Amino acid sequence: MKKMWCWRCRNVVPMLDETEYAEASHIYGMCTKNIKKFREENRTPLAESPIDTLFKPLRDWYQQKTGMINCHQNAIIHHRISGYGEPCKSCSKPLRTPNAKLCAECGAVK
Image (cartoon, rainbow, N blue to C red; front, top):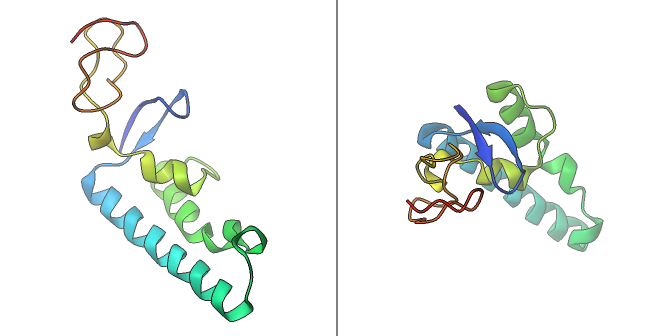
């Protein structure tokens, strides 16, 4: 885990290394399966399914690892260190992707 700037959240947040991400991804997959099972058993549309309740194991896991309370499950999955580029030489925020050539924050060229 490493705290880094997240472009989607517009804040510094705990980012997951590959080992942590693999664990989070596994839990996310289990939660997704539980949602599908719930929908099949109850013939419920997605909008009427208890998504927040069924993703609670992932949010609890993330809170235990990072201390960040009640982070949305989709945000957790994009908080992955390897999804970002190196720090900008000008403003120090990570580039948006590993292949980025331009800093989205300050406009500096890599």
